[in-house]
Length: 233
Image (cartoon, rainbow, N blue to C red; front, top):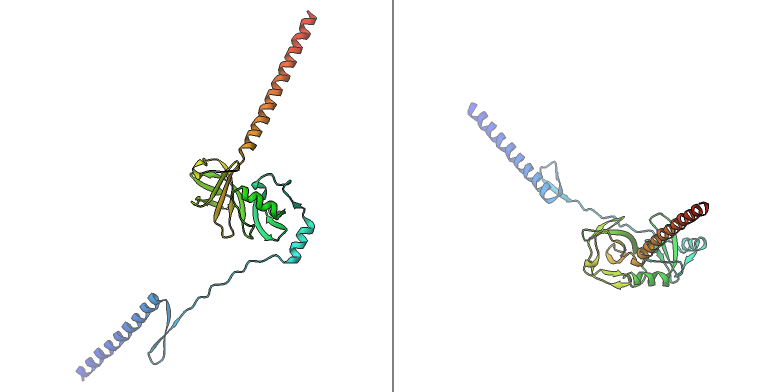
């Protein structure tokens, strides 16, 4: 009797251990295979693979009516209004045959004659047609990289670099140089333009002229005082 009970106990223990082993194995499979495992009443296991669907994100497009409303409210800028590529800073949100609509970092909307935009962008090395999603950002050079408001970027080997309207090498750019960068609709850096040296030179000349005029006025005033004292004597 005791032997029978002992045998029954051993047999029950082995069955339980075997079941636990199978269940543990199924758990491992569930982890490694990234599937859901379901144990049915009869002890069999079924697996169901989980399928994750990516959400399709569709960017909003401006309707013809919205574009027309913008055109009714905003003046169309032409070549006379655009001094440099920096004036086109922002992201293109719509393009027609006649105009390019740009949302600037401040949130303001500007409308530029398409021919003007493409001409100015080409002079900055952008080239090609104006495309929705294309961006113009200002920034500075630091450790051979371009830092703008949206981030820091290395300069691709195929990016165009211009300085005073002339094509130059990226190695000609120095830390601290102010630049204007053009990004394509995929966010790739495609062109860099060094801030106009002519503008910097003009600023220097203006400041120098003001200082010179101030010095002349000071000397004239001093000379006049000396003359007045001489007459009094």
